[in-house]
Length: 304
Image (tube, rainbow, N blue to C red; front, top):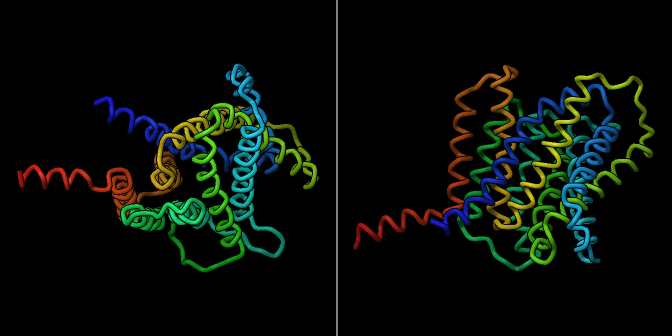
């Protein structure tokens, strides 16, 4: 019993993070209409970083060179992921932006990339269950997210880079959580994300043409406290205690939860294609987590 609990709680934290992120898609879309992208990210990550710094102030005594480097790397990779994901959706220069469905689908390629990047970096070869789960997961997300013809535009390429950045972030968390305090790593990650975002505000020359409305401030508060501070804390703690390949599959639940909230709030209508996608994703999670060990156990009991 205790062994099962020890296995499940990190994964439940990751799932909680994906539920929060799934709920944030609609809020983010409404907020970005009134606040420039880098300004939104800068405020969001600064508030989250300062709040977590105050909550976990005792952890600062654990700061050392490796933790600082780890936090800097995590923050940089996550920031790049957000930036490429955003510009993949909006487009940049002559590169046309992609659709929200393709953006969610291509971002989720990290669930396939993680096992192979982990193999490349650590020489830990993914097993057949990891590979099958990753492929099933990607197929499921494709069914949930893609409703239009799959024509390639510049924004698709940009979004793929976002998927690589998120893949490397997952692997970096796995690497530094072994030797550094995960709470302090998370605080530093946010502070570095805030730093890069403010540099982005300066380089892009962003200004607020009008003051944010009361609704904008409330939405920004939810994005900063819940969708940033709380969700990423759940993600990092969960990932620190979960194999990277399994963590990647669980994190990909963000896309279907985003669709679920869109359906609940009436911005999308459920289809048979969506339901099939949900079934494939659910099976991918079970496959990655259990490697169908319960079937082998059942077979052994029948044989015995």
